[in-house]
Image 1 (cartoon, helix red, strand yellow):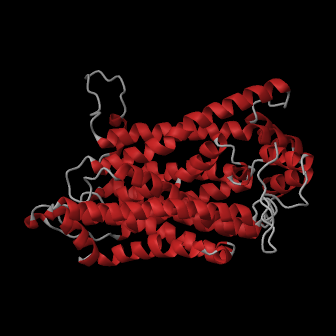
Image 2 (cartoon, helix red, strand yellow):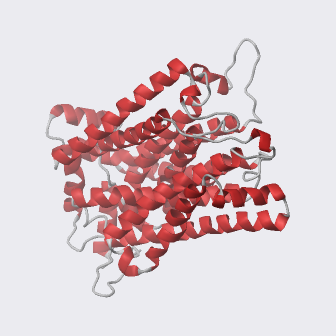
Image 3 (tube, one colour):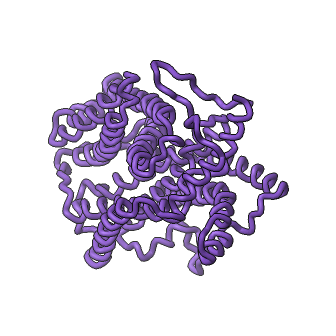
Length: 457
């Protein structure tokens, strides 16, 4: 069956792979990045900056353990602050990896081939960053294991009606399945790295990690069955994980949170922010490592279209919130909408509208979608806008509730910002280590794609 390769239009080649690529050139281009380590100055500069931010994160966590969460800006009534905002934001970023890898695989979308490995790794790193915040927000993080249903002698069990407990099970399941899916897909490539390694140490290391893969028929049969099975397990997690995160807010009776639109709205927003992060990272890496022959303009165009589609679902969620608030006649719900647009946090609200509503509309123009600079800045604005959206949802709903006597203001401290910057550094450091030691694109799937295209021109 011929892969769906687009035909050139307006003088532009929109194929999913450059015409001159062969199986050998694909293998060499991808494997040379971790084996030969090209452009080391770029890698070392990025890694050292990220590592400096990781040190800032460790300092912030150490100070938090010493002084408590009072070092943050949280107070009464804003008991949720940057920690929960960052948690939801990082979980959303990780959704694009599972969507591209699992759902597009089950739908036989071959354009995922060039980017699925990178996005799977991005999912794992984003989940690692997200998992920190609920633990740090506990107040006594050294007792985080109380959230787990372990067999203790006192007969005490976690409160399974707590949204925090739902998050523990959702995120741990998501991380486990995503890790298995990523590692299973990596096995044939690790064997290729073993065979191409220049030193015995690297050959032994990659051989150990490849679990004895030899590429015989029996290995391929088991591999394909397991890969599809894990994709089937991972696909529902795209819906379930951020649905549960949305329910964290929706089950509350607080105006601004108590809405049935939150679960689907959060899922669409997660894919929206996830694809924007993929574009933010892929565009510069594609340019630095000269991967234009494997990650073509067609891939960027398709990702931009998915980002536009999910962006319109998010816009529908905004409109639904406003409509339901005014249709319900509930003065508290109406007040939340007015306060967001005109209150003390109005600047955040209008920044949200600029980044998430206005900026993506530039992508309607095909010329702008094919301009990598414009596409990069639009994706970057969406990343910022999705963080601001979570801030607006959390803070503006808490700082003014039913009783004016309990109103308050939230002001983030240096330690709020340092923890956020530190997790960005952790994400970047893990990403640079991944690029240094593992193939960022699936050689196995790309060779299969090239072979199928050359066999059926």
